[in-house]
Image (cartoon, rainbow, N blue to C red; front, side):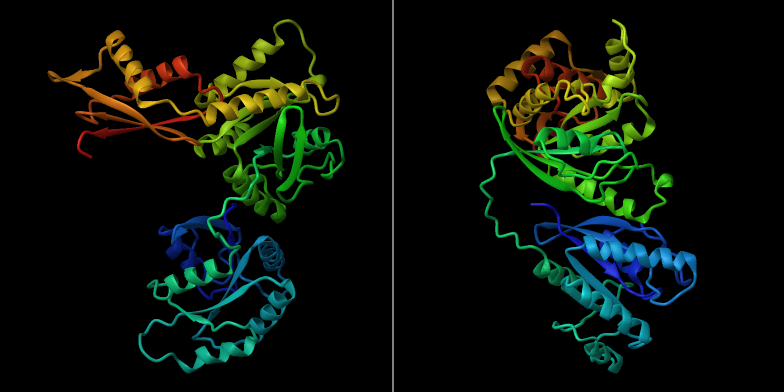
Length: 440
């Protein structure tokens, strides 16, 4: 199931970013005593009791203000509330209950989302301060959680409460045998048009205005090729280009969609060619270890000769040098050109992503590979590779045991990866190789 999202909401300077950094384990959010320092939404993944939660930090809410930046921050926080599964309403015990807290509380009650009141800046142990009990007046059903975002006291109770409020993960796998396909790319690359063409109905709003699709939208398709769930996502822009705060949260949803997917379709606009932003978007799927297909859309708009496809392919693989394993397909959402071939590609890379090689097969490959190219040596000591085994699929992961991790040079790892691809294919699939010394 997708990762639940918890948004930290509250007025300025109650310690939201300090809590966010404490949960993240690193200084991600800017922390300052000046109200309104956090203007952009940022998020981090937090592992707790075997589950992963996406924690979202937001700028402080000023219920009534004429300041343009503070109005912008309020709008951004409202979007965070809309997208969250759980809301952490943060208040300040030192200030006590304020009129702004009451107004924000009313806004959250209208949102009809689970709300956890977190009373911050309780830095002493023992009896709770009188001000803590004021926050029962906010009218939320559960007891407020006392915590110190500075020291981390109470954060475990907060994470427990978030998981209790999150969509239940009962360990039961839903009987859904469809292949999950995330459609990702820059705004206006034709993602929604492709999905609409595939499902045969105008499920997503399609417009020339970048960013029309605000959220990830699922569409189930069953045809002669199989069963598929397409996850259409908002276009991902460069951070500096995201002026519309709605798109900031769309990036969060798009990354969450990649996590849910079995296969990622990386949409590139043929009329623009490969861009730096395309490289970054492709990197999201690559780093997540997802099977991927590079889809060149709007191919009908390109003037072509007998060299165009080869030149375009070369440009893409030069820019995406880390993803030469991903197949490329040229399509048109407008005309439907090669969309049937797209299903064949999806089935193929999904099969590659779920393939498991036996340890016997892998060690035969290893014997042949080390015979052809001797392992490297340093100062008279040679690398010895004992055996290799596949430990996981999605992402495809191998563990190789040897006598010295230091001797296992990156270039020799790349050689072994190339041999794996030559032998088993793994087309469209990133390969992860873990090197271990025997005895680890």
